[in-house]
Amino acid sequence: MAYTYVHNATLIDGHGGPPVKDAAVLIENETIRAAGPRAQVARPAGDVTDVDARGGFILPGLIDTHVHLMFENPNFLGMLNEPPSLAYYKAIGSMRRTIEAGVTTVRDAGGTDLGMKMAVERGLVEGPRMQISITILTITGGHADFTMRAGVNIVTQSTFAAACDGPDEVRKKVREVLRAGADVIKVCSTGGVLSPTDDPNFTQFTPEELDVIVQEGRYRRNVPVMAHAQGTEGIKNAIRAGVRSIEHGIYLDDEAIELMIERGTFLVPTLVAPIGVLEAAERTGSMPDYAVRKSREALEAHRASIAKAYQAGVKIAMGTDAGVVPHGTNLRELGLMCDVGMTPMDALTATTKVAAECLGWQDRVGTVEAGKLADLVISRTDPIKDIRSLEQVENVAVVMKGGRLVKNLLAVGETATAVAPALVAGL
Image (cartoon, rainbow, N blue to C red; front, side, top):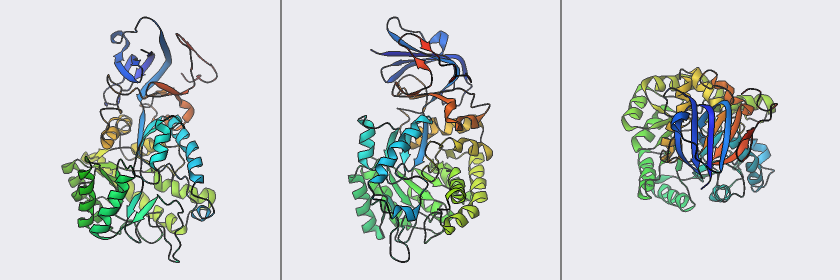
């Protein structure tokens, strides 16, 4: 048995309750055995690795339910000059930056294949736990169909998206994606910001087609469906079909919000995504004019919709669309969630417990409690007092995945913790 004892910390366990001062967490191999007030979490005798958090804050490993690990700051013209295999090498750094930011679990919303997931699971590369959707399903000319009017597809990565039209084509494509190893099915029920030939308010896939997609997932041991859905009608079509989550939700109306509450549909806001488009356009000039225009048009409606959904009680799970924004900057989303009215604790719960529920992994991750995998983060700063402090990756002092230290700015010995003062001045 290998034991790790984390102590001298305040525990924010992911359930949304008051932080627990002078807390401790006992880990056996990759699993949490006990967590709570230190007086109630006994340190075993014998050979134990002690991690002194130095007054920091223990959080569950954080979860981003909407990323694209296979690209970053997309430069569409540049993609035409790069072989698809290059993206895999770039993704190694993206995965590393993601987990070092404290995000130990992700749901990839398109582009990442089974080989990348297996490489992480086998320890060939460092990265977060992941659920993958393999390929985005879109209609011809819809969001994720990057075939320009000249007939050239500007996204060279073959697994990124697939166009399918009509119930029969849709059914076959879902089966192909599941065969390829998808944990979740990703569909576009509306247009989007980055797609060249549509608009966020365009409705895509008919209710019948969406029903087929959800049905095929249920046939495969209830594989869930996540829906890129920005326009009102397409959002409601997806909810009625039975998707697990609505991604973006830019133009929500009262009926859509009521449907989400009634059916338990999760909302993944990705508030940082349109901001990332505008920042990339200013920084590099690589964003097409249509994407900049649509991002500007969507900003205020997006914020208003998420605020309204939160106040109504919709289940909100944190997601960023990372790839549109740089990987490793995922935790910017938490401050933006608070800007639209969420409390810091609710934003953290959306990034832990609720996000785990959205993935269907609530029995594995999302909270710090006995029986869960030992995915932990130790923050130098109090995120309840300053949620934006988590945006600074140096404030994420320790990241643990399955009981294994992935990032450690505190030098850990076998029986005691030696501290590098220059690195932990904030603790």
